[in-house]
Amino acid sequence: EAGITRPRGYNVSFHCNPDMEQHHFGQTHPMKPWRLTLSKSLIYSYGMSFAMDNYISRAATYEELASFHSTDYLDFLGTVLPEPIPRDLENQNPDLKFNLGGSDCPLFEGLYDYCSLSAGGALDAARKITSKQSDIAVAWGGGLHHAKKAEASGFCYINDIVIAVLELLRYYPRVLYIDIDVHHGDGVEEAFFSTDRVMTVSFHKYDPNNFFPGTGALEDNGPKSEHNPGAHHAVNVPLNDGITDEQYGWLFDKVIGQIVDKFRPGAIALQCGADSLAGDRLGRFNLQVQGHGACVEYCRKMNLPLILFGGGGYTPRNVARAWTYETSIAIGCQDKLDPLLPPHAPWRDHFRHETLFPTLEQILGEPRQNRNTQKRLTEIVQHVTEQLRFVEA
Ligand code: TV7
Ligand code: CA
Ligand code: ZN
Image (cartoon, rainbow, N blue to C red; front, side, top):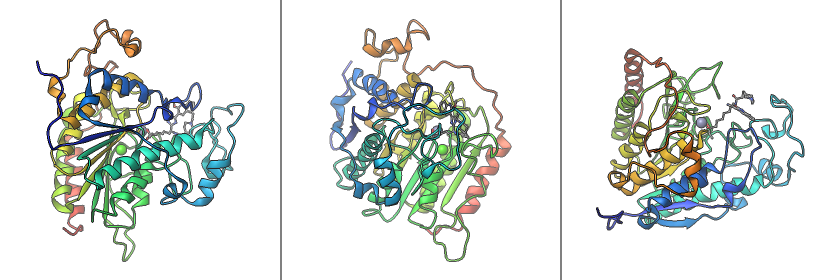
């Protein structure tokens, strides 16, 4: 069988920086930057680096970070010292400056470097797209969708997505942002609340009282104040526990299909948070690697410039599976991958306790009870159809 070859006239770039992956949020914190190392070694073991342009991303500059974030916040982020002793686990002190230093957004060694490397990768990806050197640019170290202009939130300090989309907006009249992380993409939605040049779409688990961040109801479509061009340009797809590949794929087709037809974006930014997979430590859905990857395949088939961002994902071996599979979709070699993980690889230990012969696509974990009815999913699609009547083509 032929190996993985590079299709002519079609370029995928891969942006990462090993320095980013060395950082630690703390022993018990669910966010593990080394999942990026695990993903990358799996991607490389399949030989995919030969079919992509590989770049070590640089750190974003202060000025680049300031394209979205306030200088007060950046100055504090750049000078604040790591906390010597991790505080109480449930510490959500309301006095925290910029929401920094609680248990969700701890102050750790090298925090500013971690943040600027994440944003640097996203920005490098955006520039490869705008210079037309890449058709698809992959930045698994980005996707930190909760960060606000002057506030850290939900493991996110710098919103690399907003910074990258702002770069895309210098070249494209309209950009479509899609978010398949299990959490609501609130930071990106809010950043573009008052423009009709970005449409944001988030699929997420929604339970205002029991699931972070509690926003993203079906009816929340951007402030409907008078003369706000951004009204109707936020789409929310609130879901319940246990959604399956079949249902999610159906919804994704219906929702994104209509939006692309109406909004006609010049580029797509896709946040591929892997916490929407079954078996995720924080997630609630039943998506398999195939169902999660089908969203990437759907976007690739639109034949528009595309950036793939990472995001959440708290069961590292499943994150590595999904992002490896999705990198192969970007390249277009998904049908050539050996379903069995390559043996004797250094990362193999992480999969060992599952089964003797772990595969790329089969993830382990008890499926959750599916609490999504077809009736509700149809309602969601109808709401989006009605919402799009207010959007000008
Ligand atoms: C993009 N869920 C980020 C998702 C951010 C989710 C939350 C935790 C959590 C934090 C820990 C920890 C945890 C097992 C899970 C209201 C609280 C409840 C902290 C204990 N274990 C993304 C953010 C979310 C930190 N936060 O979308 C240290 O779970 O629900 C909350 C807030 C207060 C704080 N406590 C949780 O995927 C990247 N945090 C263990 C140690
Ligand atoms: Ca989401
Ligand atoms: Zn998430």
